[in-house]
Image 1 (tube, rainbow, N blue to C red):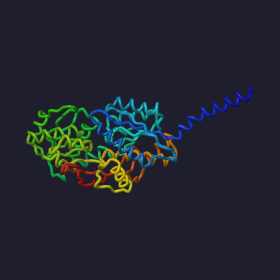
Image 2: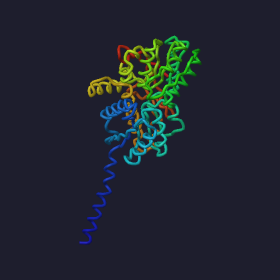
Image 3: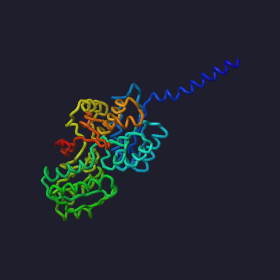
Length: 374
């Protein structure tokens, strides 16, 4: 009888011990994005893109991929807490996020501490990956974006003078990109006449725009998010300022056109994607699947979310492992990857080398202008 009890206990222990192994059959991937807050559109678009990519590639190394989403609430503290929860509670092996440079900086520091690979779909600030071994990006950075923006303003748009309007509350994106543009524009013979500062949440920009009106620039550069971009454009036009507008990637959402209306018609944007300029088979498949499911075209941030997932999945496959160090090494060796947004190469610093797409608002939608290669 005693032997039977002992055997029974052993069987029970084996069964209990098997439970974690069964759980490990899944590959847990974490996602942290701003699903609420003033730029929730970014998070919602990227989450749709990630889920659509997951539907296309739901298994890696023969194992089901399980996604865990945490809301960063558009805050740096929220992003850090979200990454902490993904790692300690959900036991993720890799992370996708955040959508903005500020949240990617905060979340990336936590991922680095735990040696968990993290890839941001859309954080463009160069500091996001600097001095980090485990942080990568699926998008180009602001060094490249500012150079292209300067050439677009000075050469393609023929402007010798510019005004820059930046959101001082978004130091890691708007201010940083504005400063890089100012330097690049000057280096190719342009002159920035005035830099005006606005702030997220403000609705009356007349005092700042009076400086722009007095300066009489030939182009206005606004590297701000979509809400402020649309509102400032409306007030510019209301004041009779008909100068051409150049915006950046953070404005390329449907909300820009909803908010700005006719005031943003004709505005140029440096961006990541256009459904009119797809160059890869994966891009064609993804766009077709996305349109079938959502009954609309793929937006830039959905395409970036998908690329972050596909790049990470490819790295895990090449690593033949979910170990952090092996996945990190595979991410750093990503070369000639034919993603949704084009051909992607990741350098030793975690930065993606890829083309940039210039779009223009035409007839109330984003229209493809040209592609600029690095």
